[in-house]
Length: 239
Image 1 (cartoon, rainbow, N blue to C red):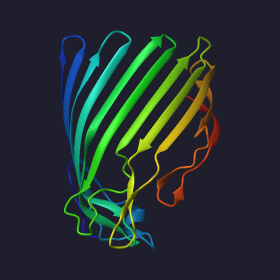
Image 2: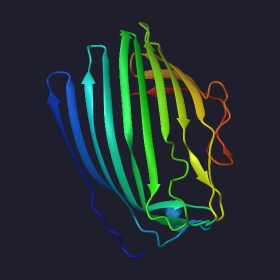
Image 3: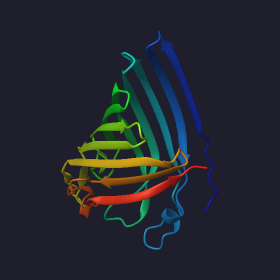
Image 4: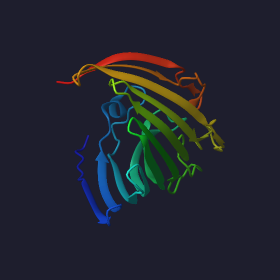
């Protein structure tokens, strides 16, 4: 392989307007080298892959409505060149000429009382394959809509209870052979819960959680079922 080089930068500016509103703008250039698997996997690797290059911009506002409630809005736009992906029926990883992502993110949080915190977020995104040569103008499995709502309750004895609802929709995919036909995955609605409690001040925590509480059937890739209800138990230590 020939040596590949690239440079990165990350710039950002923020400004406060009064005591309640803050505006920010940011720009970043990132590069990512192909992973070892993408280069040399026996069945799917391609040693000739080029590095990915991403240029991203965002601008947004955050506003504190009062001591308990705040909200934010962010516009974003990203262009990715040489994006590395496998596209059926080609079994090899390949560089895609150019992808574009653009959208808006809305968020809000509210503290009802001291122990209870509510958060919500909504992301609306469009994706585009620029100058596609195979008749596909949209990226596969990138959701157009993602919504989340969560509650966190902190009891006086240190117990923390967390519950999250996720809604994902607008994921499209294409048939494997030309002419490429576009179809959509079913929407996803998931509920996750988690309990945690310190058992030695703040140095040792025990936690218990359930992902996909209601055991929903869903897919994030066509023909590949996602896990059902998943329970876990663990401990976290801090030194």
